[in-house]
Length: 152
Image (cartoon, rainbow, N blue to C red):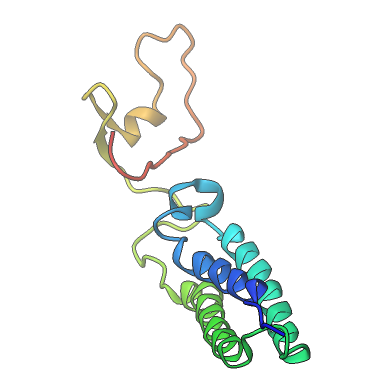
């Protein structure tokens, strides 16, 4: 009887490899997958299930499917990769210190002056004061600041 390649084993390993290597060049580009890499975690889970099925198939039917040694090596490498990914995601990312001089939620922001989209200088005090030319003199209670990454 000729032994066959264990495609489940190799497919699972390739999916895990893609899940580990695709976060920065692909999934970090989109806001829905940048903040929490759920797509990568799904890929890793699907790959681990396939890899586990391939290893089980290789050990239960060694006369039919190849991969007892390769399957064990690939499973160990995959588990190490998944463990390091989870360690970086769940532990190391939480260890990044917050900025000491950044205002906390509810604190008053320091006065600033920045150019707007037209190049005109805007200050926080000017935003909080009523705008000149308004018919109704109403003082603003707050300002919503939105920071965009990158450049225009």
